[in-house]
Length: 127
Image 1 (spheres, one colour):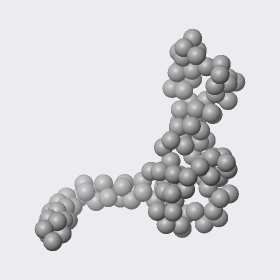
Image 2 (cartoon, helix red, strand yellow):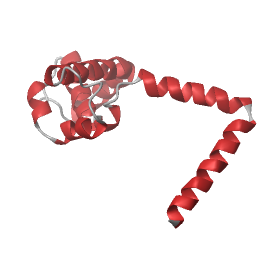
Image 3 (cartoon, one colour):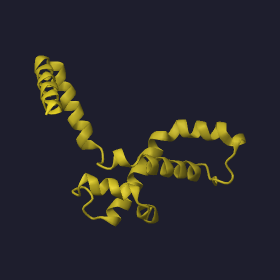
């Protein structure tokens, strides 16, 4: 009961702050844009995206994971810094395509089910 009362007070305080300045309206519009322009799976996909980005980087450099060592670190790091945005975008697209293969309706499924998809290993088979 006490937690509910505190939450309501915080909600009231936040609502009052949001109503006070025009700046907050711009912030809310920007936040809404961010929320609706990114795929729903991003909060659950960090490890998958890191793996796919690394694979794309190795493919870009025509390298294998076995051939990667401390001597190639500097050129690999420079290549990553130069093309990390493109590599990340490719990884997001690849992961989204895999989700569409698994579920035709991944955009409308519950977040609990979507999160569970990333905890299980079956997504790795589709990628």
